[in-house]
Amino acid sequence: MTRGRTVARTVAAALFLAVLGAGSARSALFDDEEARKRIDATNQRLGQVQKQLEDRIGALETQLKNQGLVDLSNQIELLKADAARLRGQIEVLNHQQDEAQKRQRDLYVDLDSRLRKLEAGSGATVAPAPSGAASGGVPPSASAPVPAPGPPVAPPSSLAPPAGAPPAPAVAGAGGRGAALATDLTAEQRSYDAALDLFKAGTYDPAIAGFTAFVKTYPRSPLAPSAQYWIGNAQFARKDFRAAIAAQRQLIAAYPDSQKVPDALLNIATSQFELGDGAAARRTLEGIVAKYPQTDAANKARQRLAIR
Image (cartoon, rainbow, N blue to C red; front, side):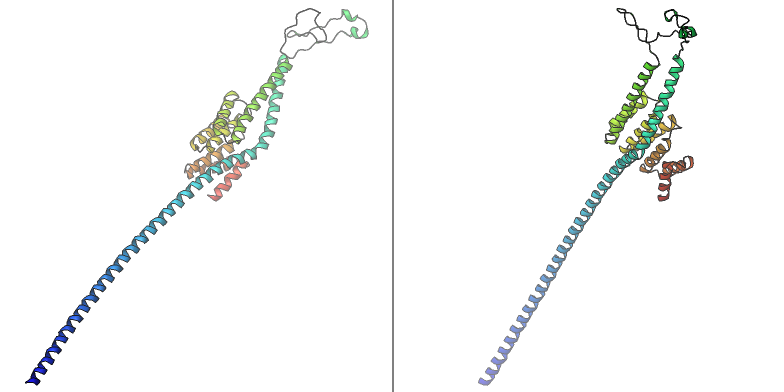
């Protein structure tokens, strides 16, 4: 009896321990599953954070890249402006010596032709005194100059007016007209040089105004085609390419025989290219090569056609 109770107690104790062990195992199993869920949630959260960081880094890289493109575009525009200004200055330097030589030659020819016209229009001769005056046959006091047919002649400068007499009115002879003409040419040259100095200094608006006034004041001057050319070149430097084309076409229409026409066409081609009209620019360059093959503008046109 006692033994049976002992065995029953032993079995009961074993069952209790078994039940207790099973509950502990189930509790441990539940703890592992919860930990696993927490680990998965943490990993998921870390993935989300990593993705957010990658998105932010990508946005920053895109922003920096776009900012770099903007800066690069601004630098390109500045370089284009500098190139346009340098192109104008280079053309000034390339033509300056030729311009000076041509200017001097044209001004000399123009001045000489005008003086010849004035001398031909106002010339008058005085007949020589009778031969007897030189040989002593007729006293000097009795000799008198015989005027030649034509307009009246001013008395010789050796015959001074008597003392107290009012001064004779000035007669505008060839010498006086020549001096006035020389003064006009000097003013004309100074006006052109002043506008050219403004262009070389990069003050394009005053330069355009100066050259425009020059062309209006001296439309027949040998320098007028050059002045009109620099108007177009200044408009190009201001990036007003349509105005540059209009100014150069005005030069071609007003002075079709000028040596500046090929340069004007070259400036037109460059302006057309800047406006995005590559086909028109190419046609203009080909026209320069065809019509003015021996000019410096034609050489530049060939180079540009080879590049494009």
